[in-house]
Amino acid sequence: KAGVTQTPRYLIKTRGQQVTLSCSPISGHRSVSWYQQTPGQGLQFLFEYFSETQRNKGNFPGRFSGRQFSNSRSEMNVSTLELGDSALYLCASSLLIGGQGSGYTFGSGTRLTVV
Amino acid sequence: QQQVKQSPQSLIVQKGGISIINCAYENTAFDYFPWYQQFPGKGPALLIAIRPDVSEKKEGRFTISFNKSAKQFSLHIMDSQPGDSATYFCAASGGNAGNMLTFGGGTRLMVKP
Image 1 (tube, rainbow over the protein chains, first blue to last red):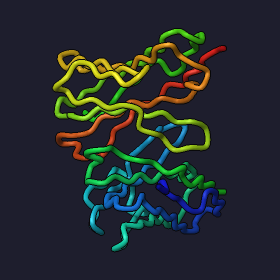
Image 2 (cartoon, chains in turn cyan, red):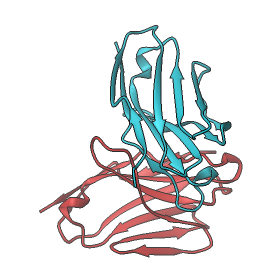
Image 3 (spheres, each protein chain N blue to C red):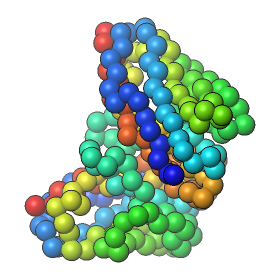
């Protein structure tokens, strides 16, 4: 059974650019959440999608956005990149909304470096 | 209100010893408390989770102890092994925080052979 797949694994972008990260959840999982992990702030929730609808959003500026497709795959977009956006972006999928049941399964993340 | 505080930040344990990591939360509406294990270059992996209707849950060498009145919960790793060396995160969700996980700051565990 394939796990959560995130692409790309590594990304280097210039300040002011925009970036799109992709996440393919475990087959059958309908909930996809995104988290940002940094040494200073730890793991912080970005948003959760379930059945193509954003169900919950964390405390991040509007430059951070996401969407979910009918096959449950999800993308997140960060526009007008800032140096502080450098982080590991993690995607997590679960069968049910909110990780109920078996909990969340995380991907290995996309390491974004903004220069 | 949403914070989860985790201690210690780092922990060194001898092989065969007991590793203990503690977390405290503020939001009394939290109703789901998982622990995650993260190895370098990997995403966090769910280790064990507990709900507040029980005070303890054990899975193999891993045990969660939960104290609802003190708003604290802890992870005990019995017979710690070098392969357990990783970063451990406690988390909480539920109530007005919704389904999002609020994570503790993490504990870097090193088990010496």
